[in-house]
Length: 81
Image (cartoon, rainbow, N blue to C red; front, side, top):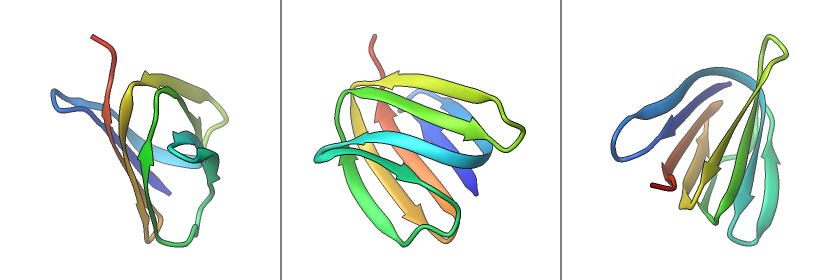
């Protein structure tokens, strides 16, 4: 699935992932390929992106919004200054 992690200033990450773990407003949740369409607000915490090749990237965010639709994950986030 394609993942984009975007701040107001720049794109922090864009690429293919096998799994994404985010800190939703109601608790942490994971996203796998073919996930049902979903929108959630995000709270402060870490976003973990497992890349298709096996590596993992982690980002700390303050808040944001996640949209999952048609194997595309878009994360619009604020990061600490």
